Length: 147
Length: 173
Image (cartoon, rainbow over all chains, first blue to last red; front, top):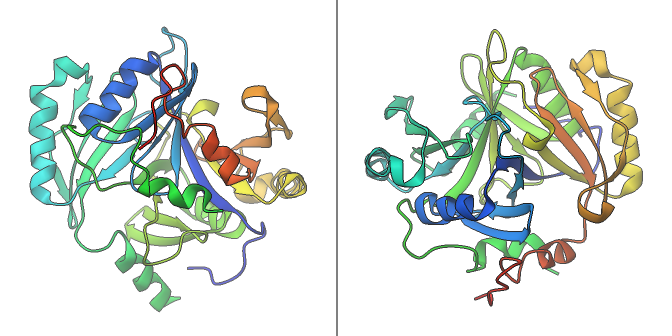
């Protein structure tokens, strides 16, 4: 981990961005299935957040714009227990048609993280996961110890 | 003024009966074809702290997020080729202190495109609805779009959406 001061002063990591084609329908999915917060602040933009001081700006694109976020560019939601990952996966499979979910990947485990991914009605990819401990503190502490 | 620090405590914008009950929107994931160059740019310029979380992978936490409290991270994964090049409307946003800092960031990145492996650096301009912000976009070695924008007044920013959906104007709780 670099201990030196970055070249840009006073930076703040503030937001990510994703697509929507039907803001009202997308908002219902975000709020009622994924369980995250969303406010449509204008006809073309809604702000999405959950638990932190950062947002994802969800921007309206044309109905025929192809999905372009890609599976390698996911947003990830932390749930409280491994069992909640499994329950979320079952719900995604069972309610796939209702929410127009395009893809549901199987539950997997990497290191201590239990997770699965799904592609939503707009083509955006989400990961639902549980990782024990407080966020990624252990990784940053280990890196700092080796710096 | 508390600005975005208030956001986790606000009750509006959600559903009481969602299928999934996440604790935190905690991570984004990006791809890169050169993890070392992505790390160099993110640490040296943008102010992220980076830590490996496996071969060809790293987690990045921004210095503006205090360790121990809630923070969000970007996970970068090295791949032989980018599967889906990103678009401007799939960008990550960094705020800096004022218009001069935006210009400074632009000059720094434009003059070091090769060092950081940048594919493209756009000129700063007035952006967003009504041209209320001053920012520029650049594309990194993994076809990831980034925006560097002047840090807005956070209370004014919150006011953009703290009265609920624009067409319903629900009362916030």
